[in-house]
Image (cartoon, rainbow, N blue to C red; front, side):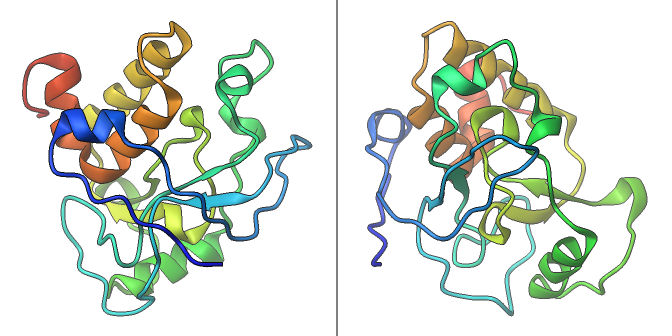
Length: 179
């Protein structure tokens, strides 16, 4: 199935963007029917990925589960622990794609979800990248979940915004640059 890619120029465009409809296989986690993995762009590379503050979009475009809707992620019974399922072998594969030696990096590096689990992010490799630990990104993820559940931001806008450029979205949400 072909993937339609949305080109975004500014934050207002980003927040108004319609998500592409594209899918890869997804598997249920923790007994929750998560649906299929929907990619936010094409995954065209699996080696030679560029390691930086943001994911290399050709390797890690971001992805979410089709059945993890606003009603589900904002529901009382939803906990990220019920859908978190990234085996160490997949984490090692992400590290190798980004030119790192597969290993345990402790607190200096984590294999992070681009679209966070609290916004219905997928455990697929397309939604993972090696990231220096940023407390600011975690703060943004929590705030986006609050905004989505309060009806002040659409789930689609939160997913696309954090996947495309989380520091820009952070500035929009909090009014200051992330630290």
